[in-house]
Image (tube, rainbow, N blue to C red; front, side, top):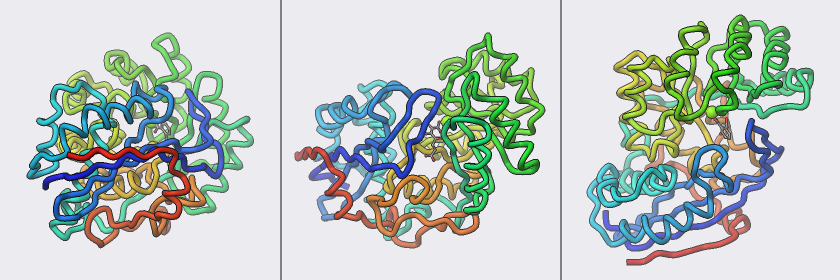
Length: 369
Ligand code: OSB
Ligand code: MG
């Protein structure tokens, strides 16, 4: 591959309903889409998944947009790149900023698999023709309201229910759902809202038969995650804490959890997600694919990576309609009995919906050799 042009687009996609985590309430997915053009005319797409504020991790939209356009893409455009894995060497002087790097890596994988005339899933080594998905539900006003929202999603066909939790909106909420739906696959995601002083709050959740509790403590706190895991039977799933293969090794050695939510963007791309799932699988750690309320571009890439064998639990890859009336890909991602089909077309397997993309685009920047 030789990339001759890169185009960055800041895109605001309206959400059907606001989404509230322990750190932020969102009304639109304020994202950034990267388009790369190869010298042979093939286009590839990637998404810079960071939110507009650095509340999930340290990355944020305007910072990443500038970093990509001023530093990362000028080191990529015009260079011969044989395989998407090789790009990291070209930008090794840039620390962290995994989500920005991931946008480039995903767009390269899209081009690479299109040139191999293979679906992205197959190019990555995936084996499944469909992947299992679950729904992630934001913080609600009351336990009763959460129960009704969960009921709605169960009627839509979802089988795994994830509820956002934070101190004061945890036990009562999850216990109400558990009482109404005694056998549903239920879990809580805290997005690092708890501290070591809060262990008693977290231990209270243990009898609720949750399939896991996601990222209770701070991202860097592998040590206290390990201490907590020794005190509860509910498996801990790490999200924010795992940003690399090295973090994966530390988690395994310390016993900081039993499951990893691998977000392609958080770890720096499909190339690294692939390595993490391999390392996790070899060490008895279960994986699934997480989401960032992604547009169809990252959603398509998530579908592809979730076809790898280490992804054994339901993924946060809901159909587009979970979040959007109109997505920037066509067709929109559809769900069929809690599964999403893996496309058979080459590359990410979806086309850009240019009507929606152009309408939702706030700003465009081109980088040429
Ligand atoms: O931690 O998984 C998370 C949304 C915003 C920020 C963080 C997270 C989430 C989700 C959404 O849970 C998952 C999805 O994209 O469906
Ligand atoms: Mg999470």
